[in-house]
Length: 504
Image (cartoon, rainbow, N blue to C red; front, side, top):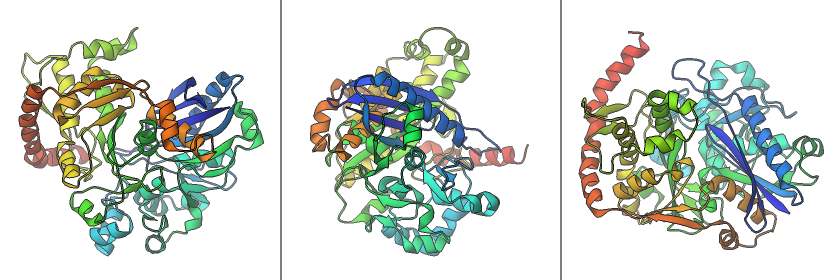
C-alpha cells in the first residue's frame, strides 16, 4: 500500500509515491511554460499541463513496484480555472492569477458591494488576480467557449475530474474564485447571482481530504495505476504544503519558495475578521478542519530564474549546477543595492499593473553576485510590513518552515532569517506539497487517524538557520529604505509603462 501526492505549480508539476510509513519510493517532475498570446497576457496550455501531470503519474506509479498506490490527492496553484465539458474534454486555456484580464470586474465588485461588505462573505482583498475576473472576461470576450464549457474547475479538482471523479471543488480552492462564502463553507448564492453564474458549473464544495471517487478503470490502465485507487480532495497548494511541513496547529507558519513565494501562517478563525481586513490579510480554510490560513505572496523564484536566464544563460546550458556556482558568488554581508521586485505586477496585497522592477545603487564595481543577492533581499523586504501586521493580529511568526525549490539554497534561507529576525527551518525533504497531498490522501482514506500521526512519519528537520543580530540590524535600516522605494518610483514607472503600452 502506498500513497500518491501530486503538486501542480505555475512552472512545473511534481508527483511522489510514499509508503504508509512516509518514505518516498519515487519522485518525478515535468516543466511547462506559460504562453503569452498578447502583451501582458499569460495563460497555460491546459492540454499540455494535463499531459505533463499524466507523465509524472505514470513514472512514479511504475516505480511503486510491489507497493501499489491505493489513494491519491492533488495540491495545485490557486486561481487558474480550466473550461471543460462533462465528457471530460479540456476546451481552452487556463488563465493564471498574474494575468491582468478582468480588472474591471474587481472594480465592479468594489463599487457594488464595498470591500468590507464583500469581505464579510469572502474574506479576500479584491483584485483581478482571482478566478472570477478571468471567468467574466472569458464570458464577454470568448462567449462561444464560455457557452460550450459545462464546468470551470480549478486544477486540483480538474485532475480529479479527468481521473474519473464527479465534479467537485475543495473549499480552500473555492475561496480563490471570489464566489465562496467562508462561514457557510459553500458557494455564495449572493455572489453567484451578482455574477450571473450557476453553481452547477463549479462542482460541489468539499473539504480537503474528502474522498470524491476512484480512478476510472481505463484511466488507471493508461497511467499504470491499479484498479480502485481512491481520490481524496486536495487544496490550494500552500494548504497541503503547510500540512507537508508539519504546520497542523495554530501558531505555525510556512515560507514556500517557488516561482512565487508565499508566507502561510496557520491560525484559528479570528474573532474579529474585519481586523484582518484592516491589516490587508485574507482568510482561507486550511485542509485540516478548524484551522485557517492567510496568504502573503509575490514573485520570488521567478526573479532568480530571470537572473539565471539573463546573466548566466551559457552556464545554465552547460554541465553542473548553475545555482551552486551563482550562490558561491554571493557576498557574505548585506548588499548596498535595493531591488524593487515588481518585475511582474505585484499580486498581493494590491495588484499594481503599472509597476515595474528597479535595481538601485549600481556602480561599475557592482558584481553579478551582489545583484543576485539584492534580488533575494528585495523579494524578502517585500514581506516585512506584512510580518508586522501578522504580529499585530497575534498570529505567531516566530519561526518559519521553508519549502519549495528555494529552500535548497542555504544563502537564501540565511538572508530571510537575517531580514525577518526569526529562525528558518529546512526539512529533510523540501517538497512539502507532494508530501502534504500524500498525507491528506492517507488521512482521507483512514491510513492515518490524526494529522499528528502523519507528521511524525513524514516530517524531519534538517537544519535551522538562525538570524544574525548584526546583519538583522543592517537589514532593518535597509527595509526602511525599501519602504520608500515604490511610492517614490511609482510615477516614473507608471509613465514608462504607459509609453510601453503606447509603443513609444
